[in-house]
Length: 561
Image (cartoon, rainbow, N blue to C red; front, side, top):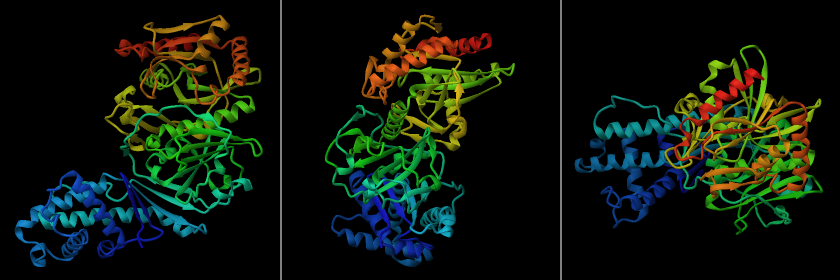
């Protein structure tokens, strides 16, 4: 029975269907034949003359049969004893083994085990099973390599030869209303084991378009959902079931680093939001639908190659969260918030608002570099949060436990600091990103008093901070949402977005206008400092240290506050 699925750069291994304890079992499996078939397709495209063993005169079956026989001989005896290889063939076969191994390691590889009866023993063994599989692949490669080269290696590198991650799937009993019965068979991700740092290379690394409302219920689309998994998460306080097509596993794994995992005891609750990611509906839509009967926000993203970019997962989840929060009377903030403890023991909440590329995350990193001026700081949110009034003061809470940031805009020390916990997307390319854990969920979700609320201006050549006392002027700046787009989306140059937030507020302007007036008026009355912080990130030379200047002025402002 074949348990291996390969498509483009993705490989999924279903350990529930087949598992191999020995080289003999591996080499005799349908999975190994399928792998060789995919590899030969790849080899013919990459270099048709790579090896004499890939002959145009032989059928594909004959080539694969001969490769497997030779590999079986190598697994037990040396090549000169087997007589399956002559001396002249050895260098070519060694080259073929190296190419096959590199092809395999070039795939994004994920194993999974599906338990339909919550088998505790199976759950406990899913990590050890994956580790054994890694040792099996690595051991077999080294065995072939050393026999063909005629000596043992002098240097051994413990590479991720098996998988990049392992997933435990479980049958779920959910709190979904009967309208969603067609989703009930989809297995839920119960546990994830990642080998970090994880490096993902995708063909697309930019999000385009926006998420707009549709009046067509996505659940009425003729879609089987047979090849879907569900990743249950909390986006802020919103329980969200993310149903995704298996072809997008390489991106979906990023959810594990960015959002709080919703454990099985929450699956029986009715979710606040549902995402259907990779729906094969022959459309090119990124839309959301409000199921008013059940009060569930449903996001639908059609199956398209471009949606492999992780930003589609992240921003749809945040859009649905924001829509649900607006309905409850909370104001979504596209920005970043720090809770800073000063040397004298005082704690201050600083919120920076701005659209993608404005310099929010970069300012946080600049604050880290001058941490000697403060006692400690905690990241409450790095991209999206909510503001609300509590005890006659303005408070804020976050949505994510991680940060999804551009590598180009981070100090190199920040990248290396969290290397062993990070997921990298397209490092070395434009708009390369990394997802790193940032703060515990209870810290993110707790109410944090706002003392300073600044708009991140990345387009002016001014430096530092400009406080503004005129509430009408503050509202004008914040609502206009101006920034110089850095190419992280399809926008370029100076642009404007309502309240710097195209993920909910833009779609619900009328409701948000009321919330903006309410929160900003209360902020002004309670003494929250408001204005602009100049990051200079949109300038050609990125302002020659503008972010560092702004960060230091911010610290000085906090000390005087």
